[in-house]
Image 1 (cartoon, rainbow, N blue to C red):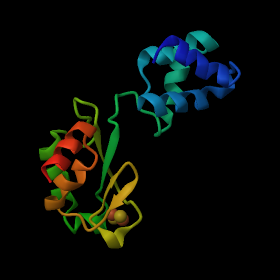
Image 2: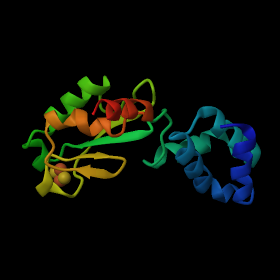
Image 3: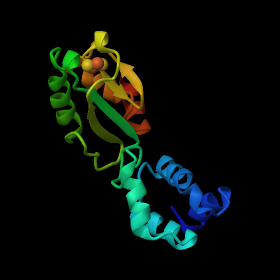
Length: 162
Ligand code: FES
């Protein structure tokens, strides 16, 4: 994000230190993570020590200091999903995307995460992509499900073939 874009966000919240959470949320929403340079610039502009900004950024789970993918793929590893084959979903996603839980693809299209329960245990095993739930998943369905979220270019190619 450019310095002027960051300053626009800071000004939107009245140049106040007390608005630091809202400022970080806006940057996280735009960048999908909090780049180090952005945090340094916020610190300079608002006169907040950088270690204080890092404390806030690392305290809240909603913030990430590492680049995140455009799409978040989340596999439920809770008991109900685990006994129905959640690990096989993770294994298949690793093959499809070449990443492990906690990692992001090089093209920054996908980040893979696991959680303990998505609250829809009866539909397990469950996979969520950008908050959209896919229940009764199987490793055979993983490729087709991910395809819906691949880059537009790849989607067009897939549609063209159909
Ligand atoms: S255990 Fe997977 S949704 Fe609850």
